[in-house]
Every structure is written in C-alpha cells, then in structure tokens.
Length: 372
Image (cartoon, rainbow, N blue to C red; front, side, top):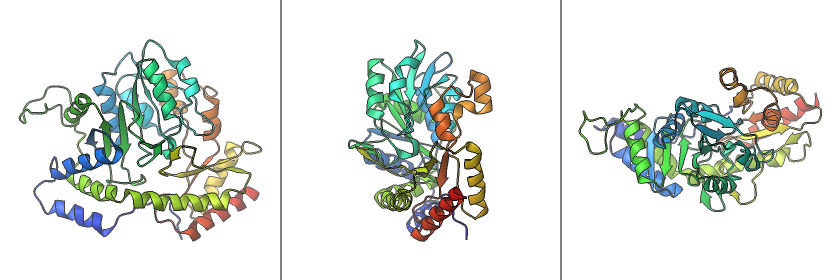
C-alpha cells in the first residue's frame, strides 16, 4: 500500500462542471473566468481578483504592475518554495533575504527593518505552510517605510489572522492552485487587490498586454500569455464552493497527527498560533535539534520512502540553491535559523481524504525509525 504525500480531492461535481465547459463554445476568456474571479474576490474579501496560470506568474505580474524592476530590492524569506524569490529575479529585481522566526517559520518581522535600504521597494512575505502569523507586524513596518507588500498566500487559502483573510493584508496577494493546494485548478493562480488600477494592469499583462477596452490587435504594453482557461476556472469554482468542507477535512488530519505525535519530545509538532485560523496546507514536523543531523533526517526520508510512505524535505533554503547563491553571493551560515529548520523538516503525507489508519501507520513508522 502506497501512502501518498498529497492527493487532489475531485468529486463528480468538478467533473460535471469541466465537462459542461467542454461541451460549450467558451474554452478561454469566457464566463467561467469571470465567475471564478468574482467568487474568489468575495470569499477572501478583496475588491478584485485576477486569474493567472500559476502562483509564480501571479507574483511576477504583481511586481511588474508595481513597477518593480532592475536596481530595486524586495525583501523576502529564504525558507519558502523557490518561486517566491525567482519571481523577484524574473522582474529584474534583487531578492533580499531575512531570516525566519523559529516558531512560525515565517519571515521574522524583528529582522526586516535592518534589511531596508534606499533600493527597497517592497516586502514579499510568505505564509509558510498556511500560517499567517506575523503579517500584522509586517504591515506596520511596510506602512512606516512606505513599502508595498506582495503577499505570497500560495499556501494559505482560507487562513486568517484575527479574522482577516490571508491574501488581503498587502497591496496585492497571490494564491496558487497546484494539485497539492487547498483547492486545485490543475495548474493556476489568482491575484487579489483592492486597487482597481493594479488589477487592470494585471488583466492586461496576463493577456499579451492588451488594453482593457481595445480590440484584438491593440497592445499597450509588453504582456504575456498567463491566462487561465475556462476549463480550469470551472474546476476552481466548484473547489472554492467546497472550501469549508476541505478546510475541515484537512484540520481533522492535522489533529490526528497532533494527537499521535504530541508526546514525542524528539519532534517539534506544528500547531495553530494564537489569533490564527489555519487552513492547513501540509503537515511538517521537525526533528529536535539535540542529537539529530541532516544526515539522519535524510536517512529517515529514504527509509520511509522504502516503506511506501511518501515524505518530503520542505523547504531546502532558497539562498543556498546554486544559481541563487552564485548570483547573489549567499553562503551557508547567512540565515542560521532557516538553515537549521530546513535540515530537520519532514513533510508527512497530508491530504483531504487521508484515513486515520494511514496517519497512524505514518506516525508509528516515524517513531520506529527515530528509535532505530
């Protein structure tokens, strides 16, 4: 029996919605795109939502719409999926990394101001694993220094901090819909903002630079083909309508893990921070620092895989990826908290329909390997 790291949750409703689009005339730039954007904006509490073909594209378009480019700096975290940083590089700007808070694993607000220079144009915080802790403090810093916030909420759909939904703290926010996310469109993403001008620029940028009201030949800026088809949008509409159900399923799996692993002092087990309504993206435990090495962690990953349990090492430090380290002169030791955390993480199987007996098998296997 294979225990999968992640699995999408697709019902007959999603299949029927996709088939209905395939039977009709509008496969792209049709009514389902508009419906998905309106539904999404209403759910998160934003004025506008703009579909794109990935979260990476969304981050890049936000940076571009804000006029960020060569010579500019954007502060972000080294503990994230690499696209948070590479989207900044795609725009021609420089990612400036700031170490993370050891509890939330998000960028540490206490370290941000020392990284701000005259070249800093924005902060790109990430709600790592769906955790929005610290976003309110980052907003205060950004306001103090007149900086834009591009909120990477690609892992946090449905999360909230003190009642405010993830994605709506910043100038712009971005979500992603890869199959391991809370909802999926196969591939896809969404930009949200309360600024009509920025939203209109993103609509143009995703569609080859066409102006809002122009005919097909009119292009007013350099643009891209970052559109999301109505096929994908139809899938997203149904998935979004199930978000409360999906959140509840994922919370149940997270609670099973917490119950089964809470008494093991060899592990740091994630929880829900005060004021946070967590929409669980993944369930990542950490080996305690005493007596554990990255070599041991990697051996456990291999041993669990050999027992048909898929696991992952979320996340390798972004600043130590070879091409980034070479381009920006990053070295091991630059961000010790992120590096220490990265060497000890184990992402356990996690998805909506993971049964309790499989959670128990994962936990028992992990404990056995730690003892061995």
